[in-house]
Length: 164
Image (cartoon, rainbow, N blue to C red; front, side, top):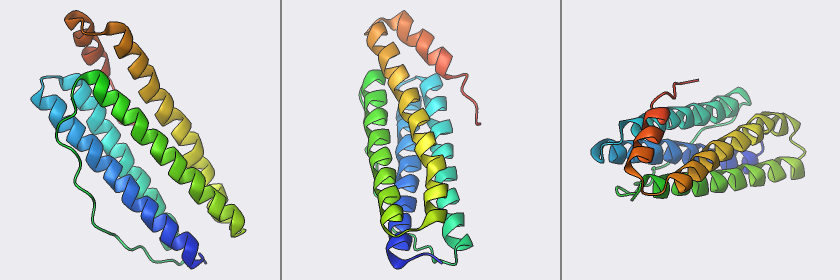
């Protein structure tokens, strides 16, 4: 059984994960409008992954006899700037999510909730991957700068991303 503190914190994390999906979907829509279909694809796949993360938390709460309370999802921005701006925003968002998961893990430690600690270890590893992916693309886009051919090559490369 989950403590009320853990249940409430996981419910907040579910909201953050759903917002993440919504944010990446908004980024995808923006990239489609800006004629970067590869980046749009990458962002759409990322949005689907964030939805899966929310569902993983959702299932965990239910499996532990808790109650999921879904809250309103904030409206994401609609304009994101350049591809570099987009991936810098993605990296910052993933760093925020990492911090949130770390706080949740600290709470599970304080509550001696071993099952939640074990579940969160998957998310901790996942966040390392999420930050690295965004960071690698930021570094690539910084090298490319405003070179149109370089941007088109990066866009083509990001079009190759498929759902895991």
